[in-house]
Image (cartoon, rainbow, N blue to C red; front, side, top):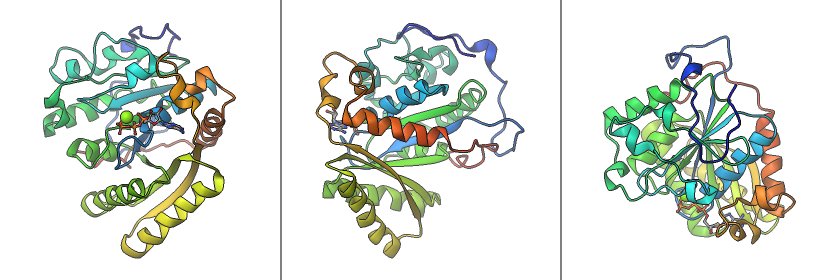
Amino acid sequence: MLMKKKPGKVIDISGKLSGGKKRGKATDKPVMRIIAVTSGKGGVGKTSITANLAFALGNIGKRVLVLDADLGLGNLDVLLGITPRYNLSHVINGEKDLDSIITAGPGNMNILPAASGVQELTLLTKKQKKEITQALDRLNESFDILLIDTAAGISSNVMYFNLTAQEIFVVVTPELTSITDAYALMKVLSMNCSRKEFRLLVNMAKNSREAYEVYKQLCVVTERFLDISISYIGFVLLDQNVGKGISRQRIVSDLFPDSRASRCISSLAEQIGKWPPFFSPDVGNKAV
Ligand SMILES: Nc1ncnc2c1ncn2[C@@H]1O[C@H](COP(=O)(O)OP(=O)(O)OP(=O)(O)O)[C@@H](O)[C@H]1O
Ligand SMILES: [Mg+2]
């Protein structure tokens, strides 16, 4: 079991690692569920949703790790009010192991922080991707869920992190450009990388009806032009409280647990918490 630590503290889980399971082999124990939170368009709320979902999943007893996969421009630590000493840049340049940079966040969540302002990390090499995949595999027994907060766009890094995941949550807002960019992202992932299943999460919706309309709108075009399936996972309402905590470096689920957005996040976490566990890590193994 991971110890609950003060936010910002580095957690030592080195004694808990399984030694790594090969991807693609079924195991008799559930494997860590890897969920990529992605979007196409920037600024649609990926980081906010990832952080709040991690907090809410931690509250229902899940062992959650969040990977800030916006490698060169990470800001999850800022949002959470933690100042990690080490980040993924130290892992990539060989100074640190992945498990030794895990940092405690608020609630029960743990973070794999990204660097900020490190341009070379925006394009990982094949070798670096392979090393990250192997290192993540070694965390299999230490966490129930790994949430990956991707960068916006369709860069090679974004593709890689999406392919690492078993589940891809596509975040859209009711804005048309967000919908078209989500379409473009799913098109690239399906045509170039054979990923056919996506879950849609509508953020900043005025109400549940508007959110569902966005889902239907996207389904109409994807059904016509793409061979993919999209399941609707739900929505997070537009809520000014989401931004209110930013200057205080606290997330809305922590600061205003009864706000509209926090309630939506809690119900998403409840839903995810009930999903049956994975026993084979072979779904997201096409990343490298
Ligand atoms: N449900 C919501 N209601 C109101 N504001 C929101 C909501 N979700 C996110 N926001 C606001 O939208 C802005 C962008 O959010 P966030 O940084 O999480 O997006 P992002 O998709 O991670 O952006 P990027 O693509 O730059 O990484 C923030 O100011 C955040 O407070
Ligand atoms: Mg972000």
